[in-house]
Image (cartoon, rainbow over all chains, first blue to last red):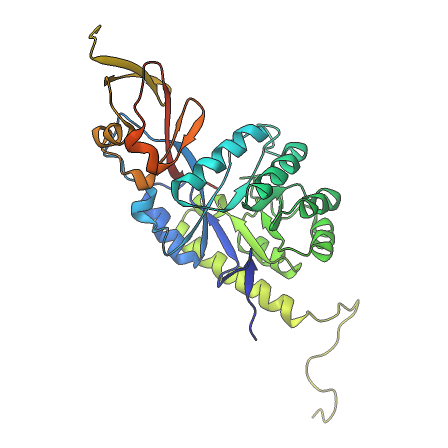
Length: 256
Length: 72
């Protein structure tokens, strides 16, 4: 069965999107990304270190020609900062597909939805394809879709928390009503969390810390790859109905 | 240093001295930075890559050079 994952008219093989932060070094980052099978990676925009000219560059380890870079606005708390960051990212090499994240609070890293919606609208008008990190609130995600977001990315739980999906019902409501892809972004702690996101019907999963902070990032990256595939297949297969009592798996007739 | 041939600019938040008449391309060469891997903002305005050779830096310019790093 052909089961393509399309964002902004572009097809991708993997439904897993991974972050490139928190790794020991770029070598580990590159190996984990390879093991995850991801086609898209999120990257941050920061000042070049002028004093240390020989520092290694992310682009030397992860080729933007073979993996889709998704510039993000992590660390931005205002619409102006987020817009500035993404305009710089576009100037760097023509990136139009971007991840918008406007944070509201340092403790929870919850999105500021008022600034997020405002920024999405401006970016869409400027020709960006905007994948938006947002709360798991169906009213807010609908607003984002109305202003032109190309993917809705509700949090499963706070960024870096590893709690798993806190509000499955909301994620299901959001998925059901959305015409653009829905990707659970943030909160995934281990493989089963990613599988649950996919079983709920989500189009993809975006995660970072659960791989980078596991004891063996390469092995966890591989686990996440299989978890997303397993969840997607289970969703497409449509699970059995739950019963309150047992139903034997072997025939009841011709017992010896 | 109070050399007339030098101009002080702000580079990524820190003071930095350049020769008078330095353009953006020359600054990148001096810093050993490849221009296809960065984006540059001067005084809050993003500069298109094709304009680098003609953009002469002047005293007190605020220059921001950014690139991609690992992030979630």
